[in-house]
Length: 118
Image (cartoon, rainbow, N blue to C red):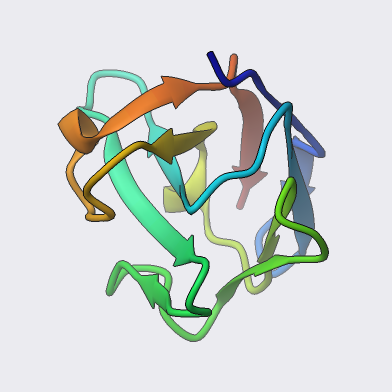
């Protein structure tokens, strides 16, 4: 069982930046960031695997950066934030398939809220 703990959320004005952190209790081969806004489905934001591959959703490409400093600590640097980025952000770990599908991720953190005001 892998435990994930997110931190770093908060409230910022449009154009601002935040850095989210995800601490894992064990080595993670594939970690993803997802977000869920009120009334919307959970959507994939970015993912990172042990080969160093970084992939992003089109809506955040060029603004968000996923990184790791160890195999257990993952970050999501968010810049040029927009009100549309307001959501609960989750990090998640996949056991087998590293994709953008929610169903491929088996371990989830509790989430951290990001609110961007205009």
